[in-house]
Length: 265
Image (cartoon, rainbow, N blue to C red):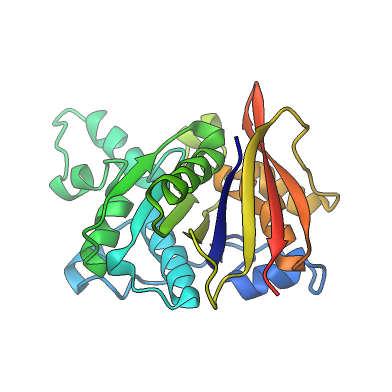
C-alpha cells in the first residue's frame, strides 16, 4: 500500500546544520558539510518560567517544529501532530538516575514532570495553544520512519495536515556508553493532503525490502548513523536537490521504507 501527501514545510537542526536552507545547501552539494556542535535556540513561544525548565530535546523539537510551520505559513494552533523520539531527554534521565542513586532519593518535581516521553509535545501545546490531537512515538532506531508512517497514515485517512517532529539528543556518561548518540538532531515536516503554494514536493511512501540508502560522504554518513532522527537525511537529500527520485530509509530488520519524491514546480 502506498500513502501520499505533500511536504509543505520543513525544519532541520543538528550538528553543523542550523536550519533547512543551510541543510539543503549541504545536501545538494552547494556547500561542504562542516560538523559542529548543535546550537539550540531558546524557545521564545514559552513563558520565562517554562523556558527555564525545559531541557535540550524540548528546545530542539520546538525549534524544528516552528521552522516547518513558519515556512509553510501555517498556524500551529490548529495542527494535528506526531512527535517521535527514540529516547526523549537523556540529560534529564541522567539526573533522575543520579538522584535515585543517592541515599535520600529526592526527585525534583520539575525533573519528574519533564521525564515523560511526551514532554516536547506538551510544551508545544502550551507554547502554541494547540488543542488538536498529538501522538507521541518511540521505536528506537526506527523512530523517524515510524513517525513518518504514522503521520502519513493520518494525512491519508483523516485528510488533514499533520506536523511530524522527529528529534533525538545525547545522553551523558555512563548512559552514553550504552546509547552513544553524540549530539542533538531534529527534523520536522508539515504534511498536507493537498498541494499548497508552499508545497515543496509530493511524497509517496511504501514498505520495501530494498536496501536502505547510505551517503558516500563519510561525515554525512556518520551523522545519518549517529541519530535515529537523522535517518531522514536520504529523503532530505532529494528534497534539497529538488529532483525526482526514491530514497530508501532504514526501518525494521524485516522491512525498510521507500520514499518517492516528486518536486512541485
